[in-house]
Length: 298
Image 1 (cartoon, rainbow, N blue to C red):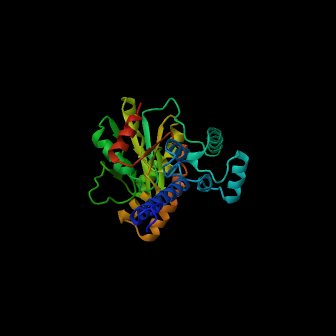
Image 2 (tube, rainbow, N blue to C red; image 1 turned 90 degrees about the horizontal axis):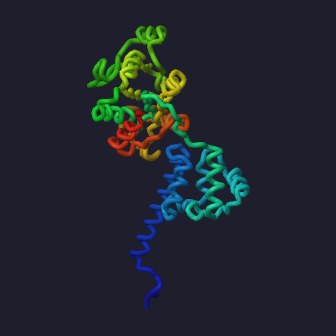
Image 3 (cartoon, helix red, strand yellow; image 1 turned 30 degrees about the vertical axis):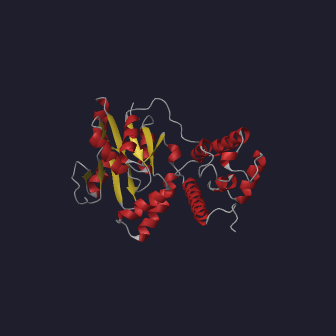
């Protein structure tokens, strides 16, 4: 006679599938923290909002070792100093433990805090393949009050691109002249191949007219704008997850395997710079992300 306390085979199989899904979700979260797609503070917020979620069921040991530069030895010393048992799960931490853990994380990796006195100059940057151009194009179409700056570039036009609308396509000699005459707000060599830069004159004119201007540029350019215009509003566009970013890059099909690998390495470095920005926006939906960027204009 079957033991009534033993769950049916179908229930055991379903429970096993759920357990595998939760483990995969926790593994994906750890990748997202290690690649800086999700900040440690954001993962803690998710864990404490829902202790039964993948974040909430993550052990504190897994959480700490997902943070770059924290290995097992350092992890154990941190837990000992904070008075937190290594068997604890994030969702099961008490109020004192949550406070000391969050204070430790904030001291090690402070999240970006928006500064007051921002201007109407918005800078949108982020890792390769995150969708900066798509979000910027949506803003251009649906938020006509915002001027999308047109960059100059030394690369050749792609099919469908129009000079003066998508880019100002110039040769190396003309780009050298723009740099030498100080006509660019920022410029950079992207992916070790072509140069891109932002002409100053149209931006100055639009800002003087009270318009909001959006620059869709790379990390190098954003840093130059921060130096040249400290009151600019810097916005970092994030992918929903590291796995999604990889899928987007591979799915584009415009680069070979070696180039994709190089760009993924670059993306990890770029993601680590998000703390330099005033705001972070997740590109999980183009229209939603574009609307959020648009609301950041004063």
